[in-house]
Amino acid sequence: MDFFSADFLETASVVSHVAAGFTALVMAPVAMMTQKGGVQHRRWGKVYFWAMFAIFVTALALVYFRPNFFLFMISILSFYGAFTGYRALYRKRPALGAGPIWLDWLAAGVAAVAGLAFLAWGGLIAFGLLATQIPPVFGLVGVGFGVSLGLDALSDMRSFLQPSTDRNWWWYYHISRMSGSYIAAVTAFTVQNVTRYMPVELAWLPWVLPAVIGTPLIARTIRHYRQKFESRRTVQSGRALAEAG
Image: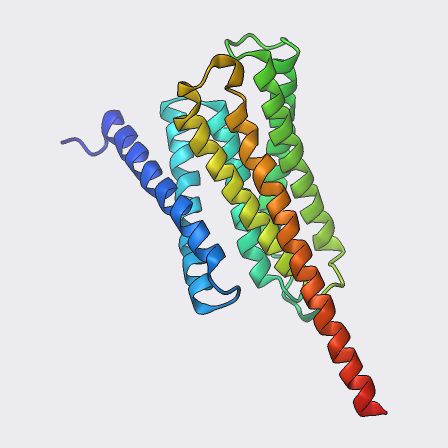
């Protein structure tokens, strides 16, 4: 067997991509259901992150063998969410020197450029200015991905320069980005495996349903923790005043 043949490398990429995808889809809920900050949460969260990294690398390889711009877009979008969500754990205290490093800036720069490219590509498709067999309505998906990725990258760059004064910012950020990356991964899975069985007029649903369902859940979770931390600070302030009096 020629381990360097195109056929073998393509097959290896497909198998690795599927295995990494299955791992990520299973590990994310496991991490979510464990105690935040606990040993099990950190363990399965790391497994999820590295599975997302494997998805990203194998997706790039598959794009080479099987050109698919949608796959290229969603692989970047999902991994950027996982990467920044993971890196937030190392940037908890910017004032104490735990701020962004060159890798954070590089990732944000690449994401910003990619977002602009996706936005331009989607716009050209939507307005019928690019010769392709892709239905114009799917150009809006590219526009949406581009805007989302670009705004995330710009928001990160701004936070690098002006860190949040909320000591719990990284908690909300971690939840938002890691959960967002999972939504993107679920979107990729449903598009690849469900769309083919749906009527053409409903083929757009797998592209939007994961975000429509997941985004409010993320917002609700963050709101829950904001209220929890605020209540805790209020109690601590009351105790401090009582002891001072």
